[in-house]
Picture (tube, rainbow, N blue to C red):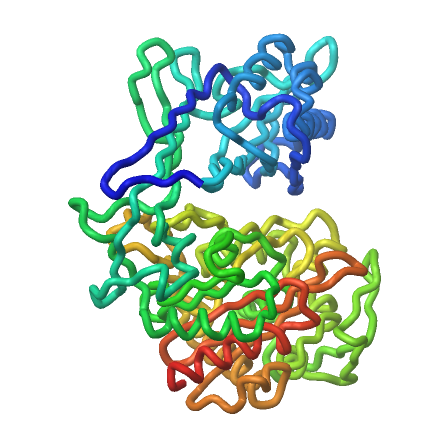
Length: 532
C-alpha cells in the first residue's frame, strides 16, 4: 500500500492510445451479452439474418480478445486488428461486455447495428458508452464496414484516449446535516467515498494525438473533491448509516452483502453498507439477478395494463414448463390462488403463466418509462453500475425475467429506487454526493390506483406473506422477498426490499438460502434501531 501525504496528490498517467478498437489483446475472460437483434419499428425492411450474425460474431471476437478474428469480419482486416489492439492500451480494461441493440436494415445490402459497451477500468469503475456499426454485403460475404467511430464515437485519426489516475489525500466528508463523518465511525464509507486513507480517482480523457491537448472527458471515476477544497457534502444520515452497518455485520456471518437505503421523497441515499465493510462497493456496483424482488416492477406493469387485479385468479402450480421447468421455493403450490396470494407468497409459476399478458419488450420499456431504468446513466456522485433489463430473446428467457432471473442485472441501489418509485409513483434519481450534476431522466408517474395496489400487496407480504420477519415493526412497513439462483446446484442470493413512511431499503446477501432468512433480519434490525 502506498502512503500519501495529506494535501498532496500522486498522479499516474497512462496514455491509451491509439487508434481504434477496444480491447487488450490476449486478455482472457471477456464476455459478450447478446440481446435480440430486431428491426426498428420504423425500419423499412427486416435486416438480413446474415448481417446480424456477422455483427454478433464481430462483437463476440472483440470481447474474447481474438482481435485477428474480429478484423477478418471487417472490410479492412489489418487496420481493424491494429486499431482494436491499440485502442485500450494503457487503459487497464478487464472483462468488457458488449450488448447489441436492435438491427436496422439499410436497403437490401446493408444493416446498422447499435451496441453498448461496458468496460471495467481496473480499480476505478466501469466505462459505459454506446456506438454502432454498419454491415454491408460484399463479394466475400457480409462484412463490418470499418471506420473509427465504430469503436467509440470520439475516436478518430486525430483523437485518442488517455487514462489519468490519482490517489487523493484523505478526503473529508460531512453528512446531510453538515456533521463530519469518518471511516472510523462508518467503515463502509471508506470504499464508497474514499474516507480514511484516500481512494483512487481518475478519468478517461479524449486527447489530441499530436499535441496531447485534452479535448473532452469520456468518463470520470470516484468522488469529486469538495467544492472549493472543502469537505464532500453527502446525503448520508449518520444514524441510518450506523444502523445499517451494525445490522449487516450482525447477520451476514462473513458473507458478502450490500444494502442501500434512500429517501422516498427525494431519492437521496441515507445509508450504504457493504459486507465486508470497506471492501468492494457491491451495493452500488454489484450486478445481481434481483430474484422475486423484481416482481414489484413486473406487478406494476401488469396492474397498470389492467392485465390483472389483486383478486384475479392466477393458479400457482408446483411446476410449469416453458422450454425448461420452473418451480417455486421448496416446490410449493397454491391451487386457485389470487394474484394477491401469488405476490405475497412469491409464486414464480404464477408469474410465468402471466407472460402472455405482456409483450416481449414491454417490461424493458416499462422499466425505462416509469422507473428510470435503461435510459440515461444514473449519476449519484460516486461510481455506480446501472441496471440492465434486456428484451428477452425467447419465451423461456421471458418467463424467467418476470420473476427476476434470466439476463436481468441489478444491485441494491437499483432495487431501493424501484421500491421507492413503486410506493410513491414517481421516479427520483438516486443521489449520494450533493452538487452532482445529473442529467434529467424523463419518466411517467404511476397511476394512483397502481401505487395503492402495490403498497397494499407489499404490506400484506409483511402481515400475511413471506416477509413476516418484519411484522413486529411499528407503522406501515411493506416488503418483498427474493431468492435469486446463481447456478442450478449452487447457493442462492437472498434479497429483501422494504419501505416505511420515509425510506426504501434494499439488501442482498450472497450465498443465502432465501431472502427472508438472510436479508430479512438485516432490514428488520436496521428499521428497529431507527425506531420504525
